[in-house]
Amino acid sequence: MANTDKPLLIKRYASRRLYNTETSDYVTLEDIAGFIRAGREVQIVDLKSGDDLTRQYLLQIVAEHESKGENVLPINVLTDLVRSYTTGMNSVVPQFLAASFEMLRDGQSKMLENLTNFPNPMAAMPGFDAMRKQQEAFMKTMMGGLPGWSSTGPAPDDEGRTPEGGTSDELAAIKKQLAELQAKLSKL
Image (cartoon, rainbow, N blue to C red):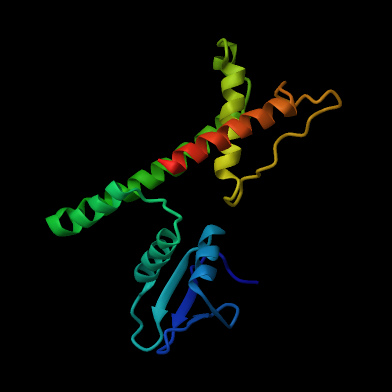
């Protein structure tokens, strides 16, 4: 079994083919993206020179996803990135981006923890239960494809009520509203 504590070593041959050293087979950029989405660290090195090519290939994966219409990075962020390379601010930008993504990961973890660890002192606030249900539906929709996050909601009981007290119909209505909002946002 492969040791997932170490980065997965991918070697690039002179023919530009990428070779997975753990499984002894050739891989594509999409395969590498899949390893990363599954939570695996990856290191890509040139077989002949030993140069680390990881950054170059990760940027290529992002560029390919962006070119396919999977726009994750807004134009203003891309513009700021280009600007940071030309203004000498490139020493601050990497640390800022790393800290921002770390805060995002921490925030997601804490939000999920807060949603699942009740009783919560805010639970007595009027309308809190409805707001919590909307947050849960939003998180299920947004995080459904990420590893370690289940997209299935709580199973309703015989009366159609979820453990949180809502009905599966209410959850479906919230999901529909969220999908409509996402469609509107994607048009913008």
